[in-house]
Length: 241
Image 1 (cartoon, rainbow, N blue to C red):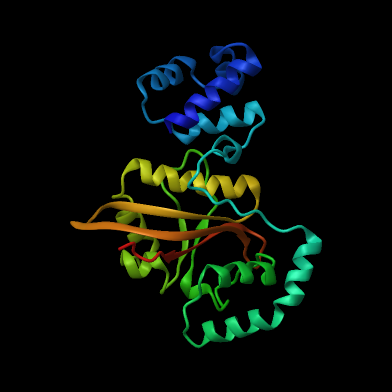
Image 2 (cartoon, rainbow, N blue to C red):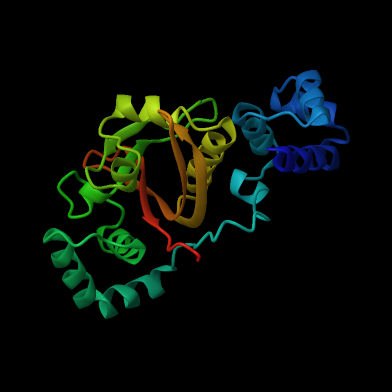
């Protein structure tokens, strides 16, 4: 998070006159933050996040120059209604195909988000293909799974079938990869809209080398009681020969 740290430090100097004053306003330890920044050490979310809030910027804006993020924004109300009407028959057909065992793709997930209004239940036709996580807090060290889809990429690719197994296996990835995932969840929560990006993950889990590229959708959803969650769908990208 070196780039994010340098950007937030520059903004703090511009707004408060000095980095020390910015840290004091945000309740962040100046000496620790400045030392980590100068050494190029990893900056944790519980440092970056309060500074962003104090500066009046979102984590998403802080990382807006990240070229790997596609960052599709939600449609306005009028366009959304026209899209719903135009694609109604297509969505119904896709839903039927999914119910009969045809795996969805990213477009199917985005269509489901529009048609459902982001209301998710374990009985939805996409439920077996997605993972659902509790909302992320900047102090979290790892995403907290609520539901792992039996045919989601995490389940099929890494062999994760339960929340406890998720913690053990995903926890073996590098800190940088985990922090990037936490940041992606935070961006979605702050913007309150879905995000699509291409991701490459590499590492070793239980002695098995993992390296793959996939397209990931993260979207804010609510369950039947109105609780907030983050829904994640991932689709492997074709190999480049």
